[in-house]
Image 1 (cartoon, rainbow, N blue to C red):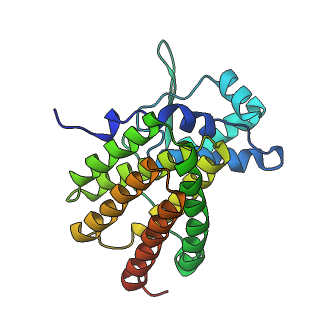
Image 2: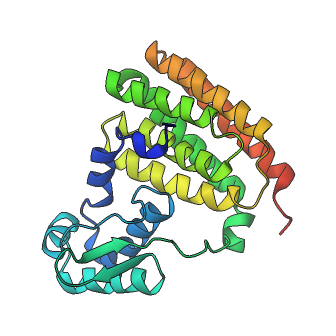
Image 3: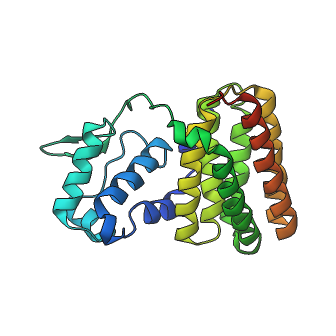
Amino acid sequence: MSSSTADIVFTTPVTADVVFSPVRSQTAFEETVERLGTAIRLGLLVPGTRLPAERELCAKLGIARSTLRQALTALSQGGLLHASRGRGGGTFVADPQPPTEPPSDELVSNWREVSDCRLAVEVGIVALAAERAGDAALEGLAALVNLMESQLAEFPAYRQSDVLFHVGLAESTGSQRLVAAMTSTQGEMTGLISLISHPSEVLRSANHQHRRLVQALNAHDGPLAARIMAEQVRATEQVLAGLLPAT
């Protein structure tokens, strides 16, 4: 049987903690919609996933039930969730998902700022990961690298594995805030990457950097891991500069 992202389970516990961690009360509705929507679009909550019961979800997010219901209604109206009643009912991630909307002109015009933010977030994360990543996390990252090597001709599958890899880097630090920052960064990058072509040569080069990065993490070499991640971010910037449509 061929492997798939469904076989990579190391990301699940920490990701769930971050997706369902408390939100800020001042923007509870908006943040709940943004957080759950981003997690769904990135595949961290896969189609068919059943969300926790309302009472549990309210407790995890630290919000009122009325706020939660408004957020779930907005996500349902957007086609990201659906509810079913009766035995075995609940709120589920929709399958299939609605077509992805193109990124906004503002995101495209500010792609260099997005890349700068990604550089700051991801370089810092891998420096910490070199100190903190345990054997299980490193094995999970290596498994994703091998999986991506088999997905070079299937960009949607490759991208899903790629997101799990980068979120896995953040999870290996043990910091929920860094996982949230990585998830937000990858959400913006997904919007930008969707606008360009994805030749297998580019994906192969990126995955070679992934493999080198895992080797650096195994050696607990933070400076090397940071340099490799910076190289990957800069390489992505060059591809975006050459292929993004003019705005």
